[in-house]
Image (tube, rainbow, N blue to C red; front, side):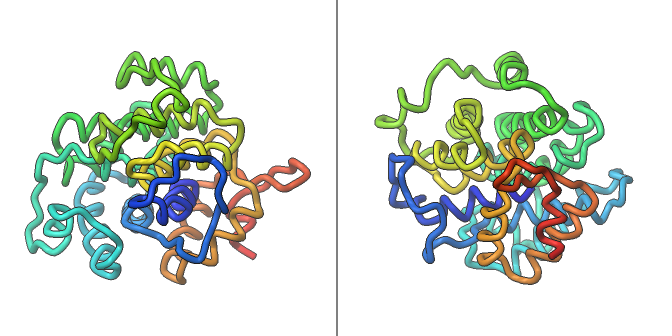
Length: 280
């Protein structure tokens, strides 16, 4: 899950000022966690709260998203989602925005099967983004995370995406100069997945995603969720990103990584877990 937060934070300063380049300082004092990070943490917290019994996951997702979202009112939520956060009886609003894809990464880490990844994705998505495209975008990210985490190759992941979700017959270099800001799932999820597929390592995946432009933080958050599952995250990046996270963020992250450990990579290639790193 931390990969989504890293993508969001690294991309946050470029959302309205697109860079269109892979050459930039990875973290900067202008970086910050946005709604992508807050809602990813909220979904992680909902999953933790279910303790393996997901019958009430949808209700739990509503409560954790509202609770955490209200604590960070300036995180950059869309207009309709902000109203949903403040509603006494929130209802889904037929959205196909990429807010569904940005927050669903934890489902791919918690799932014990591909079918369960789809089920968990649907349960946390339908409470807001119940439009078919909103549901599809979230499921594409959740299943990609699951497949990457369970050892599938990039070719297998790409085949799965093209057979079930999106056509990926383009390259990032081929669209970079013409790609515009697009917050729809269908206009951004395929970009995020292609950025991962073309990458050489975790950091390159984030840089590639940000270099496309558009909704930079959200695209990089979705890319980061999958890239973490596939590559693991370099320890130096994990240590650096913690400077942007507060105690509440770290508590949720600590609990989630303890229960659903993901890979961290040392400079010498040694593998430990992200939990090992943040537990220090």
